[in-house]
Image (cartoon, rainbow, N blue to C red; front, side):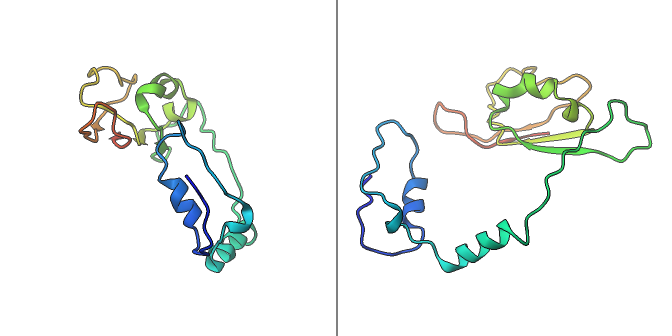
Length: 143
């Protein structure tokens, strides 16, 4: 990928690099910081995100035993391949204390064994994404 350009279009380099599907055989030529142009709107937004709109990070650890009067707890997680992480999901303390767990980008495939995603004390519903190739689709939802 040759980044030689005298054009000063905002985000052209980002767009070019975002199209890359594999690092194998990728060579980036003639890329330098002075050639990268960022729009003023993006600069302002990033400055605001780094200062006045910065949110504190907090960690929520639910109690191990929940009282029956506790509110409904729902967890939403981008798992990026549930088939690769199902054992971690089964043993995660936070997920096991939630009544409903939702996983996006699950890469669940219709050909997966029906009990492959069983989690003790949960019913599992899958919404696989279909792919016309032999690879798993990067999409799909499991609840």
